[in-house]
Image 1 (cartoon, rainbow, N blue to C red):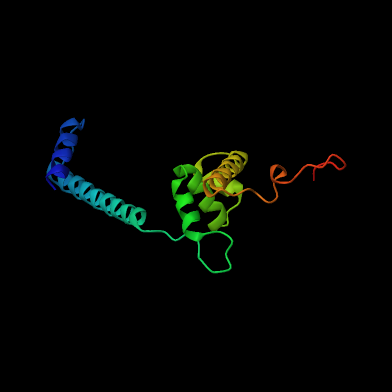
Image 2 (cartoon, rainbow, N blue to C red):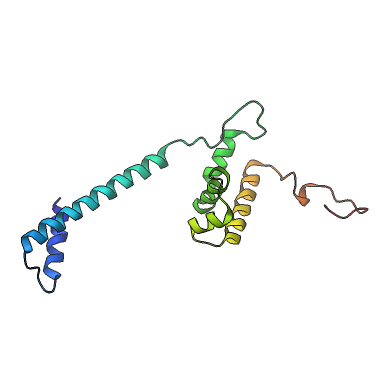
Length: 145
């Protein structure tokens, strides 16, 4: 509370011209500053709680080909922007255009970053992409598919 009052006093001193009713101005300014600080603290607490929770990104089952815990750990090791893109695309079901709008890039950049993130995940998990031209043997008699 003291910080809010101090900030408002400094703002009042800089006001040109001074408000007609400085006491009313101070009450309003301190109230607004206190509400803003409370909202900010609440947002910070909720973000910290969300970040500290142990997210289970995959549901493990005996039939799964992917080890859920290893995959979740690999996702957690991605750079934050790539992790966000993967989560928005796979679990959020968003298009690359929507993902791009959210993270502030073009749809093609979101697609490239998504591909890079998947490659990092494959490397981290020691997997190859079954549809990748690099994972298939190349035959001289037929062109690559």
